[in-house]
Image 1: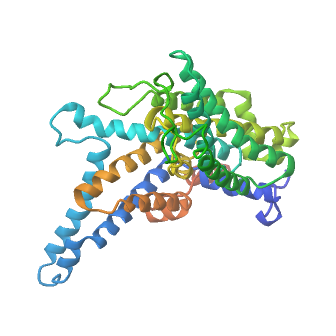
Image 2: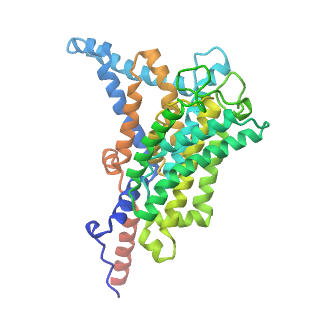
Image 3: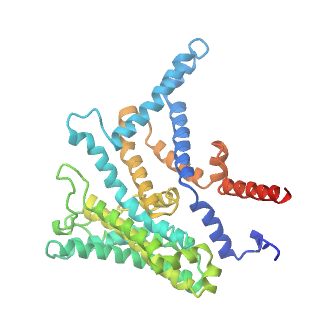
Length: 418
């Protein structure tokens, strides 16, 4: 019988393989850990709400005489904030009409649209073993090119929107492809390159919005002319809602990435490169080609997020068109475990956080920054699965399988002895 293979210590691995190993441990895992990470983040966020609430602080002064007041105030503070978050993001059961009741849900879907598109781009890069930190810049460049086509070109209905979408995808793809090409040809680290490209994109759009070709005539503010009506996404549910057909585009992008990763040869090669670059090279798969392709597609997806902003939500180009969607997309991809539908669900969750945070602040006085704290805690718990497993007493992956094999071997040994 040949001896069992000896595992290679992490210190002896090639730096590229070490990076891929760390990335695989973070972005892979069961869905239960992701759900429990969200639960843990909400619990810690609730505790922070309680600690910073004025009524709780006041009732804490006489805790030993009436402890029930402190507990009641703490429950009211946390539950009130989260109920307001739910009403502002999912369903407002206090509204008078059904359309106003579901309006928060449509807001969540609207905000989630760019998060889903950009998150898919980050997730796809993760699956290929790359850290795409440049979604922010890719969104900006995609939005810039899409907006320019939208307000400077005057095309027929239908054709104009298609050209705008293509322009945004091309802009994002070019910006992402630069990082992929530098990674493939020179070995430049994609994290450094994409971060630098983010800064370039931010300063570039600021400059363009002060030029005659992009600045609105008669205005000194850095804002572009409004896009033509033919370049905008139609409303999905009518004029009373902000939800537009860009959300359908996000669904189509999710389906495409699922097909790409699970049903296409290109997707198989990308997953092979992400799983083990050395083995992929030995199998005849070009890692350099894979890096360029994956960053082109990832950038195009982020560019679609920019299209959703300028052609659906904002209808103009501003310096803040990307908001923080590009950075939130990293969290969305991590929470979704880099799977297309997991990223889609995570985008909806973070869309709900962003849409409901304003209502939570106005209704209960809770600082909206608590939403950012919860999002950051989700990242913390997602990046530390052993911590979540130890808190909830969940066995590590493969524990049941290993236990089953051991019991089978013991049974076989007992039978042989008999």
